[in-house]
Image 1 (tube, rainbow, N blue to C red):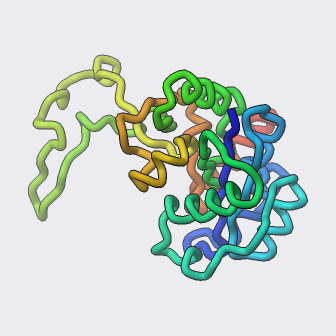
Image 2 (cartoon, rainbow, N blue to C red):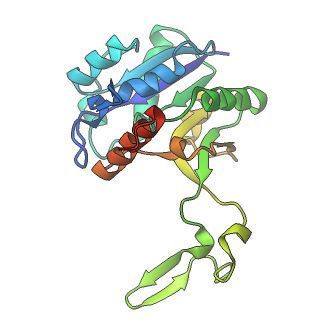
Length: 232
């Protein structure tokens, strides 16, 4: 099985400028996603698609393939992850080799584990359906409300509002850490979540951290300190 890992890393970030090359635990953020799949036999290529020369140099130094800078039309806020991945996929299959799967790794999920990645690849090998990373939901949907002015209505019909947290059924949310699908399905559906995807449950709360704001970054740094035994 041949899988292409694609890591999209735009240079522009309004909420957290320069995040993809900012040091987390002494390593540029983007290298966490490169390193986690390096050496996995099924991953035949790690392609970083970016519009920023600085990110490109860091990614190349970490061992990733950066064959070009992303076209301007794919480097805007409006450009979708699917369009970016299809562009990378087309280049790779035309210039290197065809692949059986495309693995999208968002660089803002630094704590996904190699074990989880390998479990996801095995799921894909077994069922050949889209595989989507899920983590336990931070806020249970049965305790969530829809607010309209001064009124509020439960999202799930009032069920569960009186239940204890330990009695609620398990609920999971997309964590953004893992998306794996076949090239044909991605080209046809233009979606990573179509066709009854199979869940890759990532129960470790660290794996669900998605760095998008300065607060998220502080949480990630707290994880690093915890791992090193420094609670200060």
